[in-house]
Image (cartoon, rainbow, N blue to C red; front, side, top):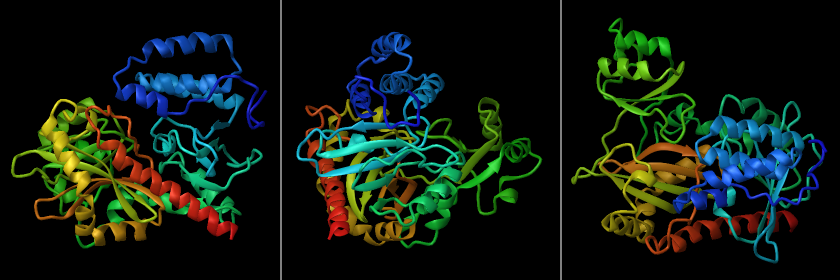
Length: 408
């Protein structure tokens, strides 16, 4: 069996990302499960779904490179994987175009649509012809592929392929490059009510010269001064992200981080009067905003899982209030949200951000590959199910409108 077919004859159930994320969120140790999958996979060398499940499991226990090697083996066997709807009748068959890569490389739409009436058909595209395999029957297409140097040629090829596609296409590939950190900050720089400092891509040698005192930050990046934010160009989920307050700190950072290509941006202090930082995630679905979460932390670099949300009832109460009164927030930032939707042209988009002290919408990142889920323990987060359901139902309703208008 080879990758020219839609799927092999494996009896293994393809799981996608959602069950693994659910287990991780609950604190389950996935290492024994990954080890069991590995032992089974060694006996079933041509079982694509099994190897793909193993790839996700390995990545979830921190073995990214091994997971990607295993994924490559899975894709040699099979490039199309199905996640059947858990509810009947089926509302929509959604063809999800994916690129090979780690678990952050594509829109994790199965986490949002877990246990719903939407059939997901995950098609891992390839080069030079991204849609070389026979296309499964579907009602709509979602381009899930992330913006990156590695995916640029694929997105360009898909732009031509999908231009006159007979089914509705969500997130046309021509719009995806605008979510790159540098492109996004340029796109939104003059929007009233938005604060998004320019994100500037630079080579390591420039920063080394600044760190060594051979030149200055302002001379190379006019309008910028310390403190700045520095991260590798391909950094995700805060990997090697740092706040730098001096040339000496920059030198220490470069001694630890060996990336050759980096991003820098001016640091904005978004702490409140109590000294705490508040970061939220918002989904824009067909231009309408939905609250996904809000984390509260004493650290400016907030990740939901390490912000103390599980341990602190007061923080959860604040997140509940944010979600309960989200309509007020959305109205306050209506112009900014409308402009983000209009300028990006993306039908499904996530925003990570905060509010500045003067009331602006501070944008950290816009992207379509962030995760949205309602997997946190209900005993601690009873409000999450209701509010994430709003986003889930909005996406389902959008699918229904798209397919109905195309069929009319």
